[in-house]
Length: 372
Image (tube, rainbow, N blue to C red; front, top):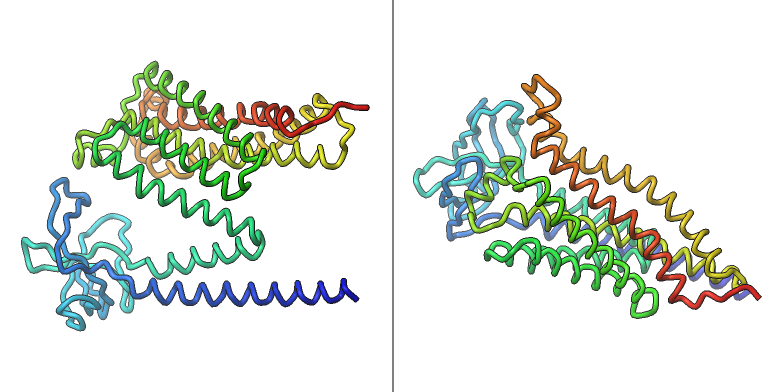
């Protein structure tokens, strides 16, 4: 009778959780749909033009599309509801907005002509994020909610601490190490709480990050990597010449490593703990060997995944840099390819090292007993 009651209670709770998530998604989408880029005070924006311009951004809805000119109804500002002409700069592959599309237009302080900037994507992005968060919470329950809080905390650290410090001219490498340390502490404590598992995870992440940081500095120095590899780095140098691009490259590797380490380390520690719980008679060596086998399987798939993620993210740049190449050797020898290879290898090295380190620390610190 008690079991039946608990099943019904659990079923009702699950339905309530689903309803709460759906309601949350609806209200998030509703709130975000009201977000506007418009601001009465003009701000500086630098797009493909290297010289910053004072531009006020508006939301607008396309009423008619005529090739490189649009008629659009403004949805913001003192001219809200007015139909204005919007110029679209012709560009290969540019998707010209059609009638009914929500777009962002800009009015430069130098002229009275509206320019098309992009589609207005915030509402749909917010809905996608809300749906993802709801799916994580429905399947992961409390742990899923904790992981989302950890993700939010990581974003806050990057946006609120890392980026302002780099823009202020501080060394990107050291600021990235600081941000990575904060992210590791926050995410581990949120997912594990304050216990032995959390201590083991933090010691392991700290140790592996130290090795990867040293290897990154040495590798960048030996390969003479400047960090100046694409037009993104070009615009960074134009906008803020005080930013060390090589340090920024190293900092990116550190942030990527700490993100991947969380997965490997917590998995290995959980594996050791589960083996210990299932069979108390296993000695330390046996637990280490069994857990390492699990880690090896995890690494085999994760390293390949990581490499494909990097290649996929950089594919447009790879195509751009490879166009017009007559010989393979100069392309492979280029700083662009060398930089991508270094990223993949150093982050993957950190993951590989993390398996034996985290397994050994977990076996040593989680009270593994010897066989009787």
